[in-house]
Length: 619
Image 1 (tube, rainbow, N blue to C red):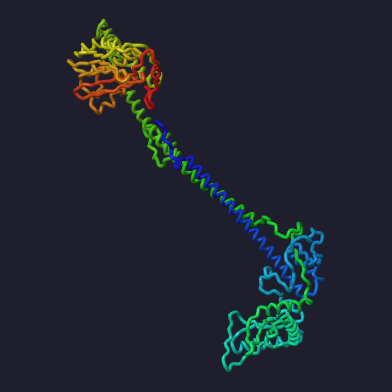
Image 2 (cartoon, rainbow, N blue to C red):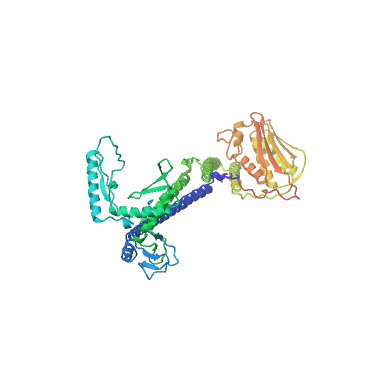
C-alpha cells in the first residue's frame, strides 16, 4: 500500500519545528526585552543620578558664586561635593585657566567639553529647574542692614497677626536672600476686601533706605538704557517687578513693555556683576578616566533581575516543551500499550490526529486486524489439519489393531485399504508443504515450452477414471494449441485440483468441461461443471484453505480442502490469477488466466518466484 503524503500543516516535524522556533523566539524576545529594559533602566538611573549630582554641584557652586566676589575659597566647597558624589570636580575660568580641581593629577580637561557654566547672573534653567535667569541669592547692594531687617520683621509679624484676626488666614514669614521678610499665604488663599473693613499693612509696601538707594541707581541705569524713548516711565518694585507707563498726551496708560523688562534685567546684571564671582567652567567627570558621561555598571539588583527573568524564561521554555512532549508521548504510550497486549485481547487505538502518529495508529490498528485474522486462520488451520490427519490415521490404527487381534485377516484387501489411507495422508502432507512453500516465498517453478492442449489432455486422462466412477462425463474443448512458457508439472497440478474439485461436487450424470483459449495475450483455462454450485455469500471464501461448502466435516465429497488454495498459489506463482463464477444449482466455472509468454520470450516478472501477500498465514 502506497503511503499517503501528510499535509505540512499536520506534519509532526513541522509542528515540532514550529514549537521549537516559537519557544526560541519567545526566549530571545524575552531576553532582548530584559536586556533593553534592564540596560535602559540602569542607564536612566545612572543618568538620573548623574544629572542629580551635576545639578546639586551646580546649585552649590552657583550659590557660592552669588554670595562671593571671587573663587578664592571654593576649593573646600568642591572637595566636599566630590566626596559626596564620588566624582571629580574641576573649575576653569573662561580662558581655561585652573581655578580649583579635586584631582589635579587627573587627565587634562583643557580641551574637554564643560558640564556647565557657573554664572550666578545667567542660570542654566535645565539644571536649576526654574525660570529665573538671575540667582535670587545674588543680592549685592540690595542686602538689608540688621536694623532694617529687624524693623521689617516686626511689620511682617504684625501682618500675620492681622490676617489671622480679620480673615482667619494663617500666614508665615519667610526671609529672602536679601534679608527682606515676606508673608507667605497658604496655597489657594484669596482675600476679599469688604468696605469699612480694616486693611492689614503689608510688609511689601514698606521701603528701606538700602533698597531705595539700589533701586534708584537701577532706575538711572534703566533710563540710560531706554534713552531713545523718553516718554516711557519704568517703575521697579523691591521684588523687581516691572511696571511701564507711556504718556499718550491725554494721561498715562499702563502696559507691558518687553523691551523695558529686558532692559531692567540686563541693567540689574550690570549692577550685580561686581558683587558675584566671575563665570567659571564646571567639569564633573569620572575620577579615573576623566569622561563626563557615566559608565554603565551591572549592579547587584540588576544582576538579580537578569537571573530571575532568565530563570523564568528557562522555566517557561521547559514547561512548554514538557507540555508539547506529553502531548506527543501520550499517543505513543497508547500505541506501545496496545502493541504489548495479547492478540486475543488487543484493543484498537483511537486515531485523534492526522500527523505521523495518527498514521502510525491507523497502521497499528490495521496490523492488529490482520494479526487477529491471521491468528484466527492459524487456529482454524490447526484444527483443520488435526481433523484431516486424524481421519486417515484413525483408519490405519483401527485396521492395524483389528489385524493384531485377528479380527480382520491380513490379506491383500486390507493392505490395499491401508495403502489408500497412507496415500491420502501423503496427499494432505504434500498439499500442506506446497502451501507452506508458497507462503514462505520458496515455491519455485521451472518454466519451459509447453503445448497447452497436451497438458490439458494429460489432466483429463488422469481424472477420467475418477469421473467415470462418479458417473460424470469429462470433456475437453480447446480453441487453439499455443506453446507457452510455464511449469508443466505445476500447470497440471493446478488444473488437476480444479478438475478433481469439480468432479467431487458434480452429481452423477453431470458434465465437467475443460476449455482453453487466448484473449489479449493471456491464456485462459476454464473448468466448468454442472454441479450443485456455490452460494454467492460463499464465493469470497472458496479459495480459503480447509474451507468446505457443506460446513460438515464428513468425507462424503472427499478432498482435504486445500486443492483450491494451492491452485490459487500456483496461478499467482505464474504471475496470473484465478477466479470463480457460480450459481446455486447451475454449476460453477473456475477461470485461470496466465501470461501467454512464448518460450523465446523472457518469463514475466514474478513467474519464477513470487512472494506471498502480506498477512497470508504460514502453516
